[in-house]
Length: 294
Image (cartoon, rainbow, N blue to C red; front, side):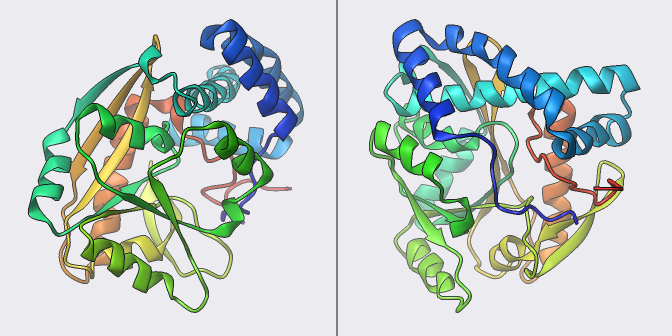
């Protein structure tokens, strides 16, 4: 099945090792250890290898050998984003440089005093977005709508070593009480953020073509965002060479109660990012539901 199961790879011990290296030897030294980690993933994680190979080979049209090479590069790049997230959240933000594309849109959301909805994806390194906002001297509260499946021992460990984050979590609940929390956050002129590219079994989904093939997306973010009558923007934080990050903000074309139109616009934006940053697609599961013999 193409839905995500809510589980991420890695162990607390592995994260502890990277944190030790970052603090004692530096960020780029910690990158060096990733050659071993990425090699392990490349050699032994059959299901995620098949899924990410399909993305490179069938959806981006890379040759067999180029796709194989990019599977390894993908794991390595993903590891770099994790190391960067640890370093930045632990107080080493000044080791990185930042570039803003569309920052005036974010500032406009605040000046309008209506709150706003951000929709991102599991590409790049959106989890460090809150640290970007400090660079543009804009103070606001971000509320990340998520599922408690994403809470884990690793997440708890990272929170224990990080500076207190400004992000608050709104947990999706079966009784739909999270809708009231979302409305309350918007009433306080806060931003509510969704990721629009992973759905779970039993959750309503919408279908749209991504990179030439139909895929399923969670309906919730697009249903909610198209009904709230607040500004909606797409936001991505993409990794560049030399400890540099690029934040992209694009205003969504959204009509009231047109969740399918909003999803279409989202997919077009997502495709543009993937074509520019093909290695930063971090959905290591059968996204297009095409992998056989799992």
